[in-house]
Image (cartoon, rainbow over all chains, first blue to last red; front, side, top):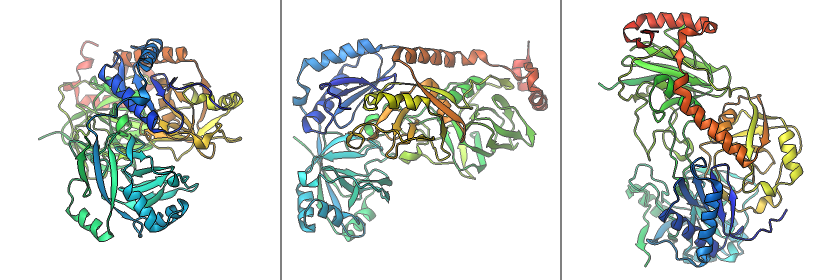
Amino acid sequence: MTDTQSFPRIAPVGIAGLLVSFADRLSEPANRAALAFRAAIEAAPPDGIEEVSTSLTSTFLRFDPLHLDHASLTAHLDALLKAQDWTRADLPGGRRHFRIPCVFGTDLAPQFDEAAQAAGLTAQAAIDSLTAARPRVLTIGFAPGQPYTGQLGPEWDIPRQTALTPRVPEGALVVAIRQLIIFSAPTQTGWRHIGQTAFRCFRPEADDPFALRPGDEISLRAITPAELDRIRAEDQTGQGGAEVEVIR
Amino acid sequence: MTRALIVHRAGPQVTVQDRGRPGLLGQGLSQGGAADPIALAEGAALLRQPASHAALEMAGLGGSFEVTQDTRIALTGAPMQVSIDGQAVAWNASHLLRAGERLEIGAAARGNYGYLHLGGGVATEVVLGARAAHLAAGIGRALRPGDRLPLGDETRAEVGLTLDPEPRFAGGTVRFTRSMQTGLFAPEMLVRFQATAFQRDARGNRMGARLEFDGDPFAASGQLSILSEVIVPGDIQMTGDGTPFVLLGECQTTGGYPRIGTVIPADLPRVAQAGPGVALRFEVIDLDAGLEAQRRHVAALAKLPATIRPLLRDPAQMQDLLSYQLISGAISAHDDHLNGD
């Protein structure tokens, strides 16, 4: 069944949630719209809103349905949607660029060669492509602090594997469907493990436990396994040797 | 010296739980907290303390515990074999555990998650606004022998109280509402889903319950190309092999598997507490019916403290009555609920 309803659209999520979707495929404008719409709601939340978050192309609102009824909230959201073209909204303020050291391939990231081949690139061309890219954090999700970043060039539109890799470690860089993720915890995955960083996305012991925010950008700096060992030995912060600059 | 609970032995998944960490979805952290929030509220009502206090959640199997000073306890959720210094005591009730006595909690007779509540609550470190272990996120861990958990202050002494728990340990019908992706499932699939008898797979955990059934797999159209989208507890997702999975409090925050609907909060404990082999059925209800159920659920939880009664009053609990008297005989100085009764 194809859903022909146009975007943006509002749909229920359980009895206490509404989802405002801007697209059913990932695109930069839809991601931008979701982030800006979330910020607008958070700036002036109707009474009864308990939480606002974003996924890749949508804004989610959790609310107390016994305090704020669906019809009123839907009307409020409708009016807000019509107030401006959200796909052309500004990106969030205070965005940062993280330049993160990463070992590509070797036995630390055993699926690099396979992924490069799937992208139709030599190993060196794949490293050049990945280190030249500056993908944006599109959303944080699945696991605490875990960034979905994109989009890479169309050559990286490689599917997830059908079989899952049983376990890739924290800090693993994985790729699929033009996106890169740095895993915030060891996990099984269908994405291919192409790099290894010492960057910790989730630092529960820190004052600011979630390292990245939607809108931040990342880039990768190729290092050797020996350098990664040195970074791990010296780094107490979880930053994994990353350099951070504010985007102006 | 601070009061403490000493763990001498613990089942494989005994964790500290409270109401979890709402509000961090956008950071990728699901709310977590007690798998059976009703049990949390019942324990708080029995001890007449705030429902925000942390308790021990015991998945399937309890453990052996001791306190360093006399402490009120309450037992709720999945009924488990329980004794104090070898003497059986009642479940769904509050008791005094004296310093040095051994509290032994065995296997669940029905259901999955039993709860041990302590007067003053478990006072372990607060991380991101809660004490709940979130195993999937690496916050906290399962308890181990030798663990010593600090307990909060308390001034109350009332024990020997009981309540009638809302039935939720024998499966039955679970209500759900349509959700953002229900339309991706063909109408006849939704009908078949409601006509199917499911059993909870023994592999379930705090993240979700996998449901086994006989029949063809359930699938949505365009299932493989669905964009990852927000997940809320109660979502019924169809995994790649067409098996439903009801997501619980510690689920991931986003997922790419389609959801046929969302179990209403009032019925989610029934899923969490369905033991292996217990039959579950699903029934779609409209939003208004879901909201009415929520209204009743919230009202019932708010009314819990008013339903608490002395353990002595129920002649059907003669076994428990005997054990109660043994204990209360030793604690009469504290037993203020009997005065004027």
